[in-house]
Image (tube, rainbow over all chains, first blue to last red; front, side, top):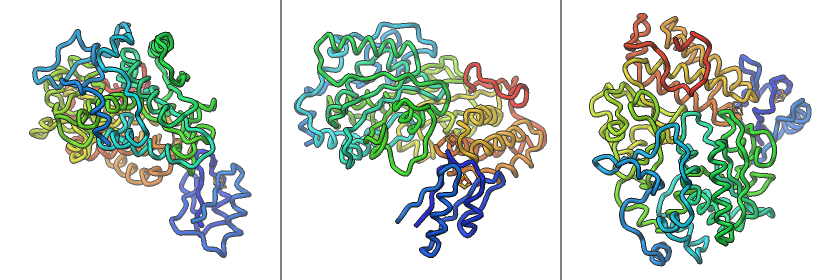
Length: 64
Length: 456
Ligand code: SF4
Ligand code: SF4
């Protein structure tokens, strides 16, 4: 599993980085930088929550 | 397979051109390989009438199958003329084989959002039939139910409408092309912005996990290409790949329309025939003794003409690639010794930063910082800090936009500090090689960059 953020929607609230701090860090403007590593199965619920909680609905989950 | 297209048609001899019939007022260069087509403010001309068009290029081939077209286009190596230079046959194949219940959509992009470019508008104004031929053939092959022409220029719009009326009156049965007006703005010509606009949305780039070839306009498989590409398609599918590839060298050997601007005596639109060198083109354009050329437009790369033999190479895609250059949007910007290429690049960077659609954080915040850093370097105000900031900010912006805009700017900036490392060094000591006023010759007419900050 991977997460993909639509940069045209994301407003940099950072909710996602709080939930997924292993995978996402924020840049100096508070926009998320997504790491390259895949999201482990154990974090699937967390990922789902992050995508639901993103106020801009900018997070997609890609299965590969 | 390939022969079946060319064999069914008597391949004409002589140079193959997009500018057939409209370059007549001007003689080609002594080598015959550079054709001056028009200056930058072309007077209204007569659109080439359909009868003349057919006399010049011949009728459309009949009985063309998708298989034949793909083979021919593949053998021709025709690549897109809008910037990315992607092989056209691959695009066509992707749309033709896309699994979708919706019928494909064809879009010809003539919006020419690079403000210095004039070649697409000129093509549409003078030879709309060739573009319409290409759209008609591709739409027919794909079984498309809708085809669009995306245009900004009003006169081009009028010319296209007149040409379509003429085709209907002559009884040509083909899919009707809908002309959609492109709004102003640099990013309105970005692929996904065009797709959104065609679907009646705003002309802003959109992020998607799918390619438009599988899911474009309202989810339909979409083939989008530049208008010059469609004109070339109309030529290749008429006369075959062998004919298209005769003469010249490189991978895609077709002719190319280029807009040449900047410090030259004869700016304008040129058609390059196979084998033409940069030196020939600059001579034709009366460039004198130029300092540098920006190849490919604002997202392009520089050639420093201060190095020996820097213009003695043929302008074909492979030779350009070997020199880490590309035709890009088909624009060449020439800088003389009056201005400094680093200052030019800083002015362009500032202009482009202002053209961000403001949708993505890294583009919205990062480009102004890159622009400020470039201004520091260009104006010798604090070169050290400028270079330091570029190194820090570029990684935060690159590949993080929703479209190619920020990456294009970064390419220009990298090329500038790379090609003119000596000039940058000079700026560190507060000097600059420019002999003149620092007035930019490559900014679009009427563009304003922070008053006095970059361009004095
Ligand atoms: S929660 Fe959504 S809007 Fe906020 S930073 Fe993450 S992706 Fe962007
Ligand atoms: S990268 Fe810049 S220009 Fe492209 S969509 Fe995002 S904000 Fe707009």
